Image (cartoon, rainbow, N blue to C red; front, side):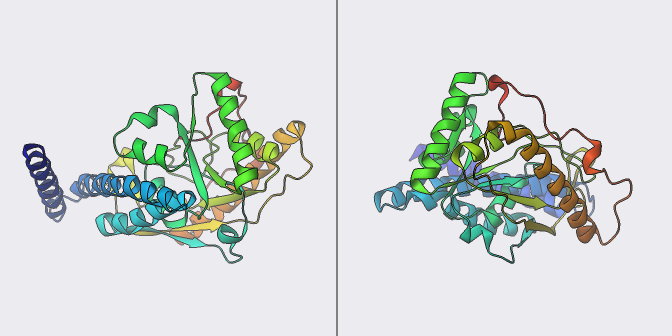
Length: 304
């Protein structure tokens, strides 16, 4: 009972602090950054706790493959209520529902991408994550219970085995995987992509499943951490047509990664112009930057 009382007091104080910063933002606009950040972390914690219980329940009834989808949708609405931010998904051909299994690829900008996943995450899909996240309370528990593919970036053998296991699982269970091929958050103010890691493309080729690019407009007008800006808003997301990998081998991975990155960068610029209502000045050319980063087995980083 004492522990519950402490938890209750902590939550009450956390909520009161969040409300205080929201009220302060009426006078000091920068306070909105702190308020929305606090609100988003609380929404993420609640969603992760919900995910732990829903993962156990779905496993019992034999529906464990949709646990991450259910948790994502929970966070979609809690995150919107907490921050006023949502992502509007354009998927006219229904690829999120129809293409399965697949390797879904998305550009990675900030921590807010977790909310983006909440808005678009497909059923029968799981994320990949660095192994250290397994120990994080609530979030790590949920990820472990719901089938997340954990990668040990410090151990090349473990990373290769995890990818091989994921490929086999995708084929046998018709289970998709969502990956951020940049390997880390870009935190860019303008629409651009970091060099792509090759792990995601090796996985798609090994499993012989299509790649489905998911492009999110640059949203620095909504969240720009360096400038302490965090506004409410709507961010467009577009699901592109699948890229087949049938018949491809490891020798084709470089070209596959390069053409995929060029396609995503072109769409990223177009979506950002749509979101801002104006042309992007000095937009990077798809061929002007390296498409991929040279990686070894120990450096495979397919998720942030």
